[in-house]
Image (tube, rainbow, N blue to C red; front, side, top):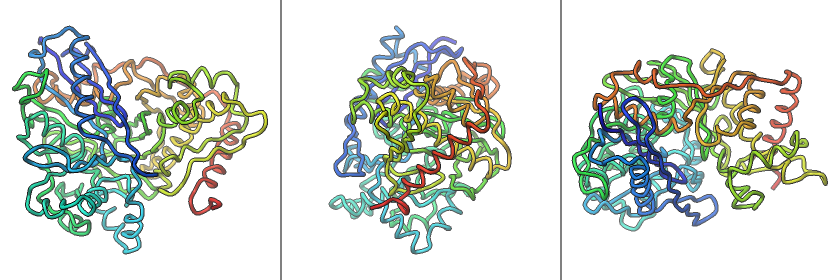
Length: 499
């Protein structure tokens, strides 16, 4: 079959466009970063015009690199930073406020207020989520309360809410459709994941008008066709959609119950496939919809570490210890170990399994001999330690061990990090040939909808492992590292931090 699939991966710090041939080859790839906005401490925002520009530039560059005709595009898949919240005018498509990013902490007090009112069990039972400012529901409530006239306009039906996927489909279709998919809907605190519907009771708690909410569709179907998009012909089917971590789980072909993957991007996200069963967590994890294809819904357990690659960016931009993120591995390898320095990268609070939005980043164990190399190594180790906490919680909830872990994302290219991860988990780490599995997952979903792929088996055939990392330390060495880590985390927690 001639032609190509276009995958748009709209992430936290940049937008990636990936072109995939019908036989699974990557024809072209381009990424464009865009600015982050920090209007107040703990607040993180994105300008939607800047995101749209980055998407257009990435798509144009990828098509140019591949040397293909845009009219040969068979379908478009979308994957996105999930909980980032957008409120826009239905007529103009213009956002009424900058998007509030998933890392944003401004609604921490509101989440605590809801917990104090005894609302968290209701939200956990219906949505599989905890009450945390990470999620979209309280961000939407904040926009309605703080943007002048927004609540009245919403009640009149003039505004639309969505996560980034929903807003992208709206823009790509020339404003013709307002939809989301089940995986993204499950990240809003407003969607009943068992009954698979918007929940009026939860919406009432957050004072969200039901008319704001998009139609929820499956992850693989034709939602709309392109219209009026610069550089892209009209009439191309927009045919696949999933939140970034669910798309990565799909792209890693984790189709069997118990299969697990971890994506190392701006944050780090561990998911394991629980099949048709909704498994509620007793250990601080989230329950989420992995994907819905046709009438079949697959669920997952998820653990989220808010800061992973962002910690490396902080070393680069905040401290100036490296000039580019790619230098971190070489800098860390200047020393054989971290010199007992531990870095807890709670730069946006602690996510699962701790859920402490008021935790703060902490560097522990500094001495006169500490160098930039020790801090670089401790940063990579801090990313890996967070995943150990998530795996421990996930194994307890799932009632089964994770014996192999598939990894992806930009930081998965770091051999030092991957080896340390295998050492601290005591399991084999499998890294695929292509670590852009988030974008691949969206392309596969779109390809299934337009007939490029016959089904899951044809997706599995395209998956290849590039390298496996085996544990190389003793249990005693592992226990020593983890003891130092857990002591440092205790010091970073809000209830034990000296203020």
